Length: 106
Image (cartoon, rainbow, N blue to C red; front, side, top):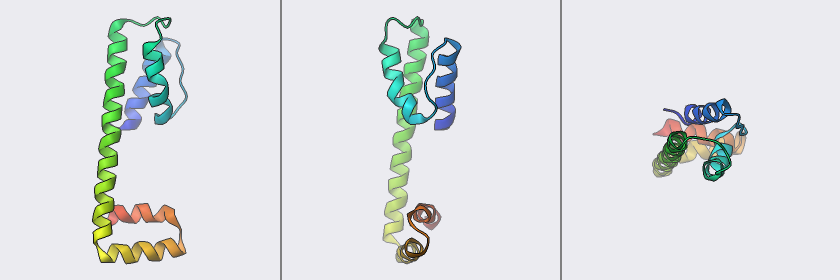
């Protein structure tokens, strides 16, 4: 399941109970722990548990993505052709393209 799907699932479950959180993964990661700990919010224990599981899954997926990004970066750093291409693109088009090229070099 993608991070976007997880965040949308979390937001949807909360919205069904009248709890709104801002769009975006970072907002969900920042807001959900407080929602789960707030005893005044009327939520069943089952729902709290399910949301906590979804938050845990979201964090694990985010960590996996960071690890994959680091692996791609290391691979690109080890290949001379990728280094030359990234340097050329950085000079001409800027840093946004560099990240896309790293993915192509592996």
